Length: 517
Image (tube, rainbow, N blue to C red; front, side, top):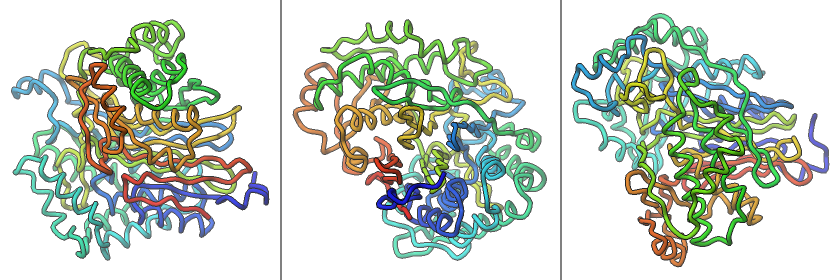
């Protein structure tokens, strides 16, 4: 139903992404009569060009769409059919590698764009990809943040990976052109998803992976399909929060929220942050024990949200002292979250990722594709829920979210940040619901992340000194991080206004824009 005239004081459609050029592409789509799904796809296509250190044409995609009810989409790729623990052990590997061919799973993003458009789109992929093609072929001027991200990402990769040379022109004041990527996007516009998952492109991707030691074949790529799922739900304060089920860590976010929902949250300060940290530790420990491809899980996600499970976790929290559960592995992430809403009430919460910066380091030169390294999330422990196996999806950190109040949409939200995403959801909702903080201020407020091993707490530079001192007194190891550090993610959100319409907000830690009509 169109919004009433009384709502026109607020934007009646809007979009937020982590790069201003992508937001502009999405807003232009809305202005030209496209809906929220059209806009989010146009923005995502552009984002993969102008911010390849976050996401792109070799990554995965996840979404929650509201069209009067909630629909989940899992565009998570699987491992090769030949992927076995023994095969990697025979190569002398003790852990899944972060880089190279073994770290790549089949990219789910390109098919996901078409699946979303088939169900809700009103414009063709060709129309929606015009901005992305223009940025790729004619080039764009990288921001200082973009230049720094590309430079910093290159440091992580072994010297034999030559992909950084593709971005030699990504200098401030320069112009980055990606003609091979432009040609790929035009292929997709002409041939649809089969232009990626069948034929020359699939064969070229598979060959690039095998050159870097991987086992993937063109048949593995051609077998990929996205999955429509029902979101999972849990209450927090007076709202219902929707997340995606496994293989994502959406159940982890809901577990944190349910644990904290049993406490009266202390005022902003060390006692509050301690409670959130301890809830996060417990939920992360459960995630790394049980969450994976649902075909391989031994515990149902509903059981992890049941009253007895949550009560047992709450009882483990010492409100005055830090705990030290078994450490979990924290991968750094290269991810983009974006959201859109239109005047007919169609809402999209979407997240897309290469994973670690530019992913596996395997670059498909012929088509300008940086392939993901989502396979690095597997482990090589026989019998573990998240152990490597043929045609299996790894545990996934990507979690778009949606908040309902009285059964109707209230907040579309999410964040990049790898493992930190559930904790960012928790901090953001606590700011808004417990403190009554306005949306944009809530996104900009100080946040923290929890690092593995010694469970080090990384706090932003503007976290009050008394909070830091109080956490240390409780036994937490605290490490300050600098301003605008993406180690605590960058989140974006759209809130339904009190009289209809939307409040659109973007995180200052990104180079994005929150735009509305």
